Image (cartoon, rainbow, N blue to C red; front, side, top):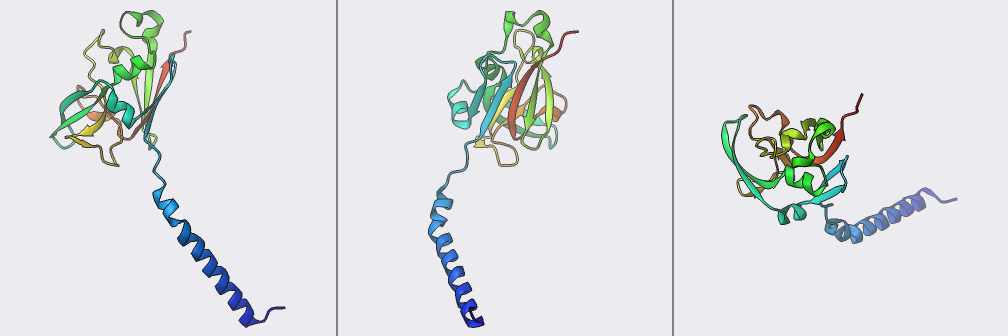
Length: 178
């Protein structure tokens, strides 16, 4: 049986060993990169996509100058048209978008669970002016942590209720037929 002094000595040795292990492994923890931000496009698509910030930078870029209705401030967003991302995922567009496909919609979801719905027809430039953008910069700088890394911007709406900050996924859904 170990006496009190022996137990204290044993505990001190254990704590010192634990501190040494943590100290030696700290550089590994500190150098582990954060996972790359991803936007998932799935559902009723022929080619599901996982788009990173680097992928978005390589796609055809658009710029939108809008007045943010919340603070009445002009903001310049840059990113990729949502219509382009849907095209890459194999979502029907243009002349293909007819009949029962006109009952297709998408759900855009944020990291915090906020979700909005758009009909596919309102996003198709063959049907109406569609300027909905998946932005990754505002005023020339990457979106801040509370806005990005991706933000859905729908500039023609009277209020930004369907602007989705911290956008994480887009799910395409075909409405059930009766």
